[in-house]
Image 1 (cartoon, rainbow, N blue to C red):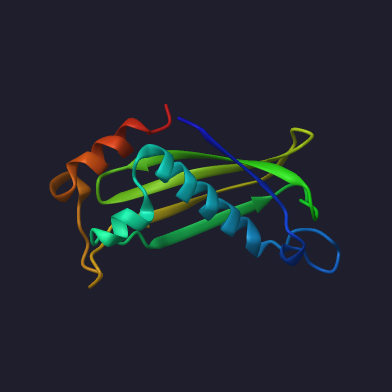
Image 2: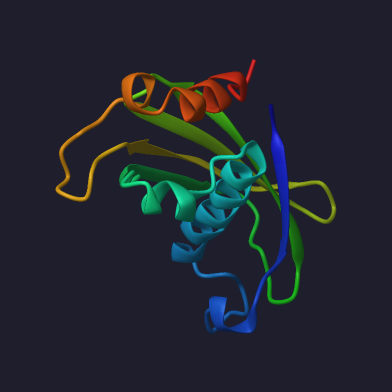
Length: 137
């Protein structure tokens, strides 16, 4: 399943050249991932209230075409891997002309508030089912 998240580049996200600073693309990925998980019924805030923390353990972005202030983009996100203990998302940022502006991935694990790892398969089978069903084909 590919989820599309639309957003507009804000002025404060740009640099002196008027383009989105490279560090903000990772933030775009995060916004899209949070919206995607909410769409799946895996609301991150609810999961945290239940004691599930989802830290980022790896993030990567490659840039192709700059995104400028006030430009609207679609962030495509898909769950590329899910083991119950770890998950990896892939992202593509597409500009209004349909060009690939950036792509990347993030990897996450599941832990308790004491940062001890947990497996959703054993502890939260419903979240596990929802995420498993959302894997990209």
